[in-house]
Length: 244
Length: 244
DNA sequence: AGACGTTTAATTGTCTGACAAATGAAAATT
DNA sequence: AATTTTCATTTGTCAGACAATTAAACGTCT
Image (cartoon, rainbow over all chains, first blue to last red; front, side, top):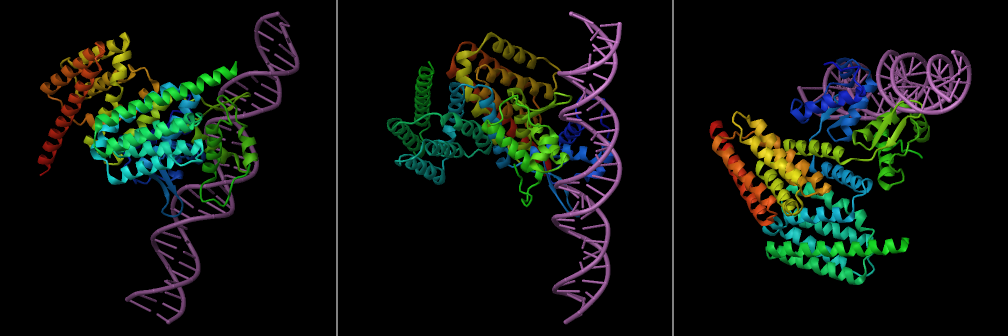
């Protein structure tokens, strides 16, 4: 293969793209061993450091893994949902923080997505997921909980709700949406009363899921979305007032 | 700063993580210039190639951009929705193809997500988005269209439907779900009759969105989901039969 | 012959030093 | 003052070397 040396892009970026395309197209199947760095360098007519930079780019996307030793090398990595979660969360978090995405926009997206899988969760919920939801709701009611811990438990609750749908693709898609919201949620100071109301809604959601009542679950999620927006608006209004 | 040389992880991975954490935490704001490669090498007590491998990892995630020249260097990149789309699509596509995700699972996730934003699309649709949907529906009715072109137009139609919700976070989340489905959809051979039915449903969706009728849009999307699953089941059944 | 230690070859990880290319700033020239 | 030239800085690339790791091949002893 040849690489265009007159292209404006870095050689390592071009090589990474070539290998990435081969992986996506299926030309390089999972667990296939790539040629050694020395062979790749000769093949693309570049030096080994350049090849290594390309491989590191792919490793950063979890597309390959490397192993040292006699039978080592770079192998096409089976992308796990777990790996994809991490990347999704990093990307989503940065997208929200770097693009001045409003709380309202992010919150709307989050609850729209959650409501999408609520009917499926109601239909398929296992005892495990229900137990997790109950446990988190109970944790949230404990006194002395910091706002951060409350938010973390909130994320765990909603994560269980989403996982209950039993669709890994949905879980993966929503992981970013829910977890990326946490830094924004952490800005909210929860009063005892607002916590009480949220916990009450959480319990209602758990009840609806347990009863396999999709309509009730959807309605309660909608109420939670509305209430969360109200809380945030209060915080924003107070902050704006203080800024004056 | 110091890097643990006894850690099992590569030095470049550790350095990349340190810088990535600094970006995520906000310690390194957008457009901030990182120290030069030579300075980073001295700072982390490693060689320049090692620093470069770390920077390439970050560049692969669009976290930094680099520029040559006197005032060049590596800068913290403002992550654009556009960049995030690309990564999302790549990741989602590979997740589906590498993990033997069934068509049913992927399809369910896709339509669940789409139905989540249909009410918002109905409420906020602009003339632009409606025009795109109409144009794609019309393109789909043209004779002589290959299955691939039909699928591509299908993606464009649904993309417009999602974008009509006017929520960039939702658009970003759904881009992966919809586009990653395309390779799976391309496996389906569309008969003239099935195309006709799909186009009819598309037109009904466009009508509902235009009329701002969220309920009708949701119902039609549900019908489309069911029909798509039926088509796929037919293909799978035929394939299994041929395999015997 | 079989179990166990040793050597060896292959491969990635890291370092050093060097040069090319780009680029903006400073200096020189018109 | 405007333009050109020079220069310093920084990234991009290369060549070569050595260390670390690993599994297979080889020998040795029982």
